[in-house]
Length: 268
Image (cartoon, rainbow, N blue to C red; front, side, top):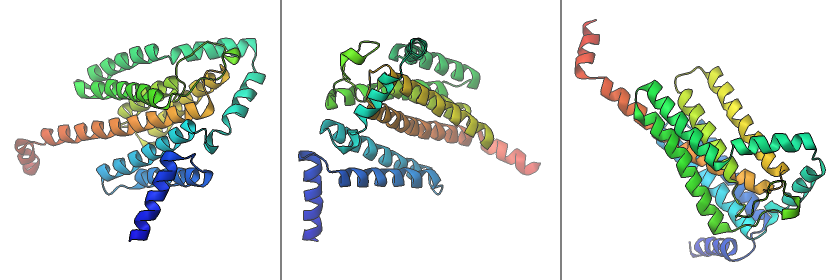
């Protein structure tokens, strides 16, 4: 037992005080992926399933944050990916990328989030779905700002940026906001849809997120690990928001099943 405690202490010390080794980083990512995958297929308990997925996402984000802060092994692809994007620019693609990134800006995302929340609540005749949408997007934005301040990563060099941005880079706020918005909207709208419709909507959400992430890389304002972290953070926000939405739906359904309704069904 003392040996086990000592081993754990040494690992934690290495992660927190030294440059995280490639082996530890890979192991942490593998564990995070396993937790998320198991939580996604675990159906015995919705709470436990959500907790497993959330733990996996938190571990992945924490590992990536430490790697970025320490300039670790997981950041080795950042430079080459950015260089490739810069080498394949064109005037037409520049205009398209700027237009897309404007649509995914924090201000645009906030306005779209409020609009979608109001519309969904009006359609459902309940304030709960709308609050879930707005709360999820807002929480993701706040978390993104906090992580940016803690990690303090610099943007790519200004001489390769199509649009000048000088605030902290990690994680990508555009990707975080966009993925959180489309993710929670898809989750709410697909609550009572068929499996085929759910898959189609989810594919659309993933595609939109990838397109926004690519524009941020193309414009030279983010590194690869920035957009990956943004997607992870947004997924965490949607996971929690989705759990609250399902909890609200379950309580609402239980309230509708009154004793009078049960008696009527029994008589029928």
